[in-house]
Image (cartoon, rainbow, N blue to C red; front, side, top):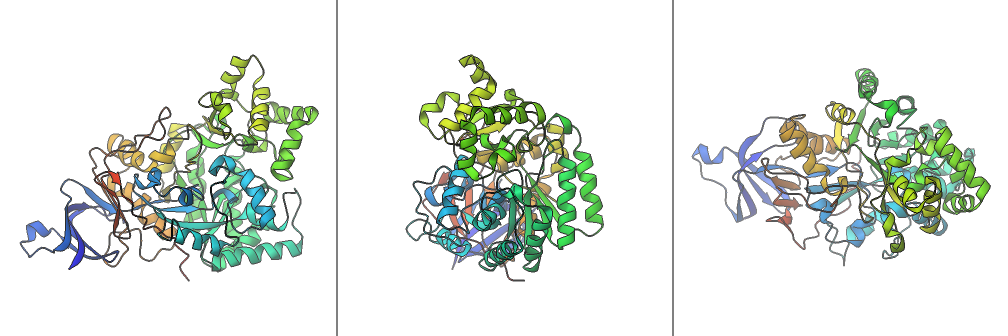
Length: 541
């Protein structure tokens, strides 16, 4: 007898096709049969060890978070309700060009310091890996050999590769160094990574010239992976930066997935149609392009990420040395407030838009939830003085919300034919961005049910089948016989994000059941102790 039959579900299968009513039978982690209109057909209905009445619920594939920052969270937190409770059954890690493999001891130390704001310092994690394959094996083992909360795929982080080979210096790679970086990217893909990421406003990835990136993308193309850049500007030079990535990947013959594809800051208000026209022209010419977005207007990054690239040379230690020197710190301030630093996307910083969302030192907790300008006014000093002190005292640890987005741009981009969903969710800090806990139910509730920006079938396809196709997963992302039973049951009338800017860790409503590999990780709205997630490796071509 099969393990489970889900009865009378309204199946939204991830293809974008109309929903249908069915009984869905699951056995040994896979969907073994789908009986459409079983109740009305008058035929003998399937039976199983367990039967679940899904009357009034939608059954869909599990949601795929195309841009996640759970690289350490999956290893330290077996509960991981931030994603499991949203219906996420697969996260794509290794984003923005910085993560924890491949590394050696020295590179790992620098990376840990550089992205403390994303993932915490990692003092509670045993870094017992160095290669991409070893990191994926570590995800497989998870907690006590039982696995992790949800599945995870990995992108080789170009900035980490550059740190390992070139270091944190602002200079071109030598031919020998480029060969070594190509070899490391190939090795990571052979060991299971699904592509390559870059953070081209983050050190040291930002120091790579386009020719260097093109060479690495040619390796990615050879393995059938994709390139996922956080490109060189989302502000003053946004359209030019998008065009660079389209041209670069066309030269390399590589698939392109644009990370958190936003048009931010005042200079880009209302300009999403220009971006979409650029993409449509490339798509119509045969380019392989997709993108992801989060359904919110503010961005989220680290406070240190705003600094000019010259101030970031040498990595975290170099940044702190420059911040400690008064004359150099004044140069940094001028770039930030007057010129428009490349780290702040070429736009002069408005400290009223920069809200501190987290710090690593609890003694600095009073700054959390306030803008830099508000904290500076409270202290009777200039905003840069406050920001500089925070960076030094917290060891580059502060994370920020950056209130620079535009709702009309968000809506226009999410309607596009190659759109997928990604949370870009940072899980650390006292007041993280609510997208970390709310992205997927917000798409289903606010933008689909309430605003009608997308139909339910379209929305689910953008969160499931389309990202699975980008990842080249042969048996995930659809409700289809033979596919993995990574599934979500939600109530389309009530599903909603619970997270807010005031209470960002509030879990969603209307998602009573989530299955990973046919096992309930959310049951009756509560997290079980099941750890069914594993590393999902690149499918051979």
